[in-house]
Image (tube, rainbow, N blue to C red; front, side):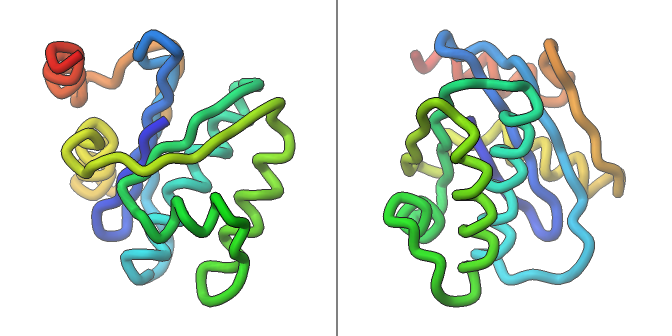
Length: 145
């Protein structure tokens, strides 16, 4: 699962074990948030979508070291605490989960979705298909593998 933020919008891409997109979403956030809060909200949005899909096992990937570390150790202190706590509560519904950091360049598809939400001002969700605006990025991703 890849999460990425852009301004006050987030993008989420959920892939299966083969790397194929099974769902994606872009969401416009209401309010003004610091970058680390927006990153944390992006992860939470991805977890919510995975739960809606009734997935049993998930790997959460984020390019935010702060968010990955906070979820990994269950750090619910500080300004991110309430969001981290909410994410951890959602994660309890999965049979297994883990979180890992990935480099920003491997998070482009979610970034494009966030930019699309920013450009249109609308939130969208796709299930069972690749959103058209990320198909080129996904082709490049597949070529790297």
